[in-house]
Image (cartoon, rainbow, N blue to C red; front, side):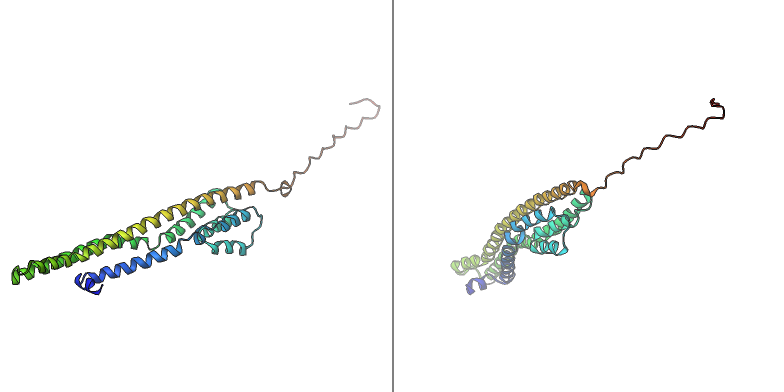
Amino acid sequence: MFELIKSGGIMMFPLILSSIIALAIIIERFLSLRVSKVVPSSDIERARKLAGITKLADVQVDELRNGSLLGRVLATGLESRELPRHIMKENVEESGRHVVQELERYLPALGTIITIAPMMGLLGTVLGMIGVFSAINTAGVGNPQQMAGGISEALVTTVVGLLIAITSLVFERYFKAKVDGYVAIMEREALRLIEIANSSRKTLPAAATPAPAPAVARPAPASAPLPRGGKPA
């Protein structure tokens, strides 16, 4: 293994560093994008129950927010449920954008590794070929087998770069598909929460609204007194 790394030349070091970074990102994303940390069913049920309660305690909302990323979005909706529907929806969308950024964390770095790893491998091959032909120019063709061995060693970096890029690409596509699925679930549950909050606000008990006071009939005006003599004026 060490001989293979040594034969790749100086470009093997950035390639090895890129592979270590890619492996760390893949492990971190696997741990962070678990269902229990992003969209647990317990938080969905809890948010639906809280949406039907008239008065919420701050502790209940904070517990939902700290439970998962979906809970963070739904907690924002619960805090805004007394506001008009369009403002509540804007607040939920703003919270959702922050959550999506957290879901996609480190994926741009993984995409960068996918792009530069083959280029670094190709650069290492070109540098190796330059070294081979410089040796031929100095000492002549010499042994053809030795020259073929030098060319094969120069191609090691290309192989390593392609392996890093292909492996990283597979996991990047997998993580992006997983993020898209989570975002769809969050949008669906956020819309349901908004509808539940609106329906709960519309179906408040009628006793909470004071009934209008009954109209009081005015007494008829008193007739003018008759003049003396008994005849009306």
